[in-house]
Length: 140
Figure 1 (cartoon, rainbow, N blue to C red):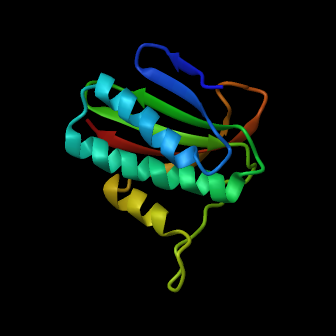
Figure 2 (cartoon, rainbow, N blue to C red):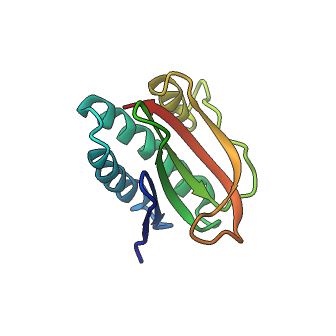
């Protein structure tokens, strides 16, 4: 079931806990950024970053639902995006010199200009669930 909460400039969507998680996250983020009139180039960067975060949630926290996409606008200049999962650890996969895991977070770090991170959080659609939110911030 898809649920979006729009509190002015804040959106929350439930994401599927399967391989469609990144695709759904990309589509929902495009919708929100279109409503915020974000530039095309920034939308493309943000869509790539959210795809990486949703992929990590699916690959590393598939057994820890729920997965949620959060988009919020602080002011007329910036917005943030986060992917929440119910995995209780804030540890993230690190980039390895040889291997494919963790490179997505390097992309997020680069495209966000270092404005990204992870926070302990509660799910917005079910506040009883504790987990983590991995987020990035961009200029509109």
